[in-house]
Length: 596
Image 1 (tube, rainbow, N blue to C red):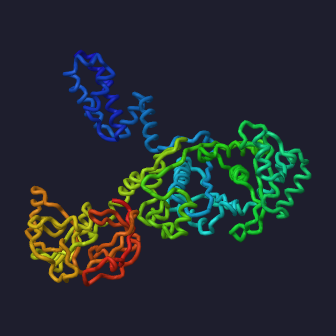
Image 2 (cartoon, rainbow, N blue to C red):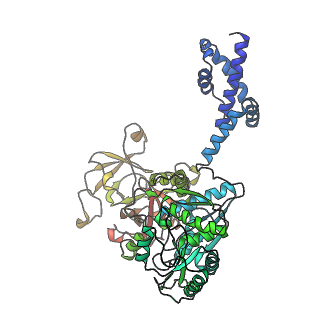
Image 3 (cartoon, rainbow, N blue to C red):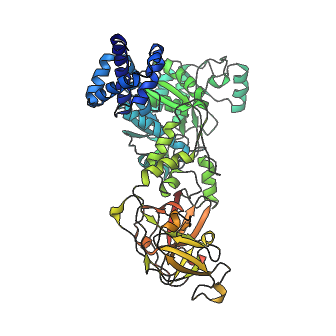
């Protein structure tokens, strides 16, 4: 290899070595450099036997540099490649696409209807808005769109429940508004719109107006003068009309190609009082498109995210914005989010019906696809946010896999979750020989937490599937190897005996039985003195016995029942059982199952 070629190889290799080191924030690797180097320079290939030695020297020199020195040199040698690398890093850091037109700041709003606590699908909006707020140092508004006291009737408990859910997801709104507090503001803008010629009062029956609208024909009230419209609107505000007698319509284009945009209703009368005392006296209520459009402008919203099915809302609101000469915010439409695993529909009204009928025992029932349920099960809000962010903002419908939520949650909780034994439908086996107690680790990755003391009072409970054939062995984790021998558990009464009841004999603590002979490792609990547990799961309640120390675990702690899964402690223990417990007894302590 001549000196000129060697210089070219060294120069190209240094660039690739720097790229490799900066990309992975570690030492460069010769093999990782060779591939792109030879691919980009076919003329190097005839010297393939010599080039690795040259590359090795270059890589060693690059690895002697600090991280800052590597980045500084790469910026000089290959600024475009560094910029591309940084863009990739930013994309990895921010799975959501950048927002357009952010130069003047970002103000976004979540606008929940407080007709019930949130289900899982509701989490997507605050997850995305909260993430954008953090990215752009923006402003996050939570505005309760509660201006329908009839068909979307607010639930007074839902206001705080929704704010709690936002907090659970890890965000805090900068501003909280209730639309039902702002009726006078909407009235003022309606009056101004009337004076601008943008609205008229209409007393047409709904069916009659619908026929005219679909035919592209104006109703007889459309050319009403502003003074008359204003008088009739004030009568609406005063509550002089009943539901269905009078509406205020926005004057658009009665021949518009989309009938849904033709002279749409801005205000209507509702006889049913609002459940909030502060709003109970109002009878003239704005439709969501009017109320939301006015509020978005007045609160300075710059970017709106809404469902793809609400595209007409933006188009309706633009008529109002044009009358007032306002600039409409940027809009991102996305598809619906669907969730696997649940049998219950993602619908507030459906869940409420099931709760009211007693088919679900509240909004935190483990079978309910609600944020209250996930929180009670020990699912971290961060895990939900991360999974929602990965869905992006596509206009297509997307499916949230609960396995993605569980995988992220496992990463978050595993390190803190101490281990305990929990046996379901326990089979009692007398135990002959061995230590007085087992000593499994509190956490397999944290020796400093020590070991548990699980007593062995002459008999243990194991799960039916873990009872070996007579003469076969199992390894009781933290205790040792036992063999199933003929006999029944000592002290078992005749009516409690089953074909599975039997006896173990201790045969040693040589771990080679597991590592070399494949003896199964099983969990177990003492047959006396364990803690009764009712484990609430998505498939129904499961009863069993946990090891004695589980009774001291604080409420709200998340632990792992070994070979069962992670669970959140929901209630205090009612005490241990001295005799062999029956299923009816096993309700001493309640936990909510999170996932495996």
